[in-house]
Image 1 (cartoon, one colour):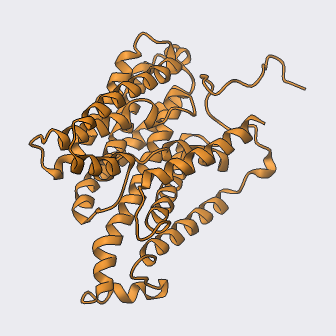
Image 2 (image 1 turned 135 degrees about the vertical axis):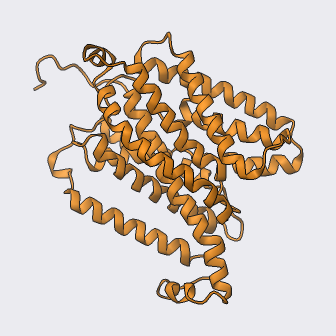
Image 3 (image 1 turned 60 degrees about the vertical axis):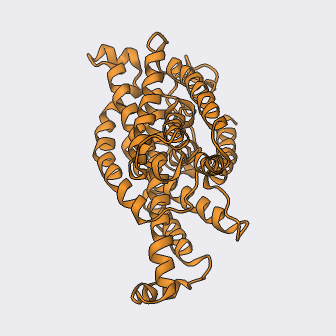
Length: 352
């Protein structure tokens, strides 16, 4: 029997908080089991990311190789695989966290960086620097991506000022993202063949060529993001109540939402600078986190989402390196494929 006053299930494009509170109790895993399982998955992915490839380094020899700086294996591991793996883990965690911030602040599971102008804004800014040969050093590309992400997000909020609540922000964000992508395609049409080939891999998302230089440039931004994400937790709790309830408590939901969006833009910009957008990790990681802890809240889902985002990105980078070796495929193609398939299964299971 339905509870009194409870109507049919709300559609996805609604203002209902994106939780999975109706999951059967028997399907909920204890928190220690979830933490141990995620730790094991990440450990396996780290070992695989360092070991697999050419040359292959057996997992039990990793410590010995790192102790022999004169060997070729050490150079490959330390100069190529370690920085690439770090960016994959940090980037996946950042994009997954950004997705959760957006979904919770807009109270919709479809609110992801790809749909509100954040990812496309970052990509447009970097593409303009490359194609138009703007006097911006390569080392400042993460900062350029950050600025583009912030502008894309602010355009969405500015255009949605007349909209109604969180749902209006999301729908207008899709329109803003589409417009930014149109500008991006126009810029790419003016690129020469070399620029076009480089931008294609970058805009799809790729960790090819990531070295310690990119890691050292991105690490300060990741470090800056962490305390800001923690500061967003109270705002997410407020926004989860809805705009009217927040106003009744004397708080301004619009200001809180703007702050959360700014932090999400910072997270996406950190990633887009060194490797381009990592598609759909911000969609699937929060969904998996809620599936694992359906009765949780933002402070519970944030670490789970970061760990799951890191795992998805690291696994996708392994596939990008090895699936069609020696040809390397773009990372974003694999994250998009995994994100769409897993997201469809999760949403289908939620609807039934």
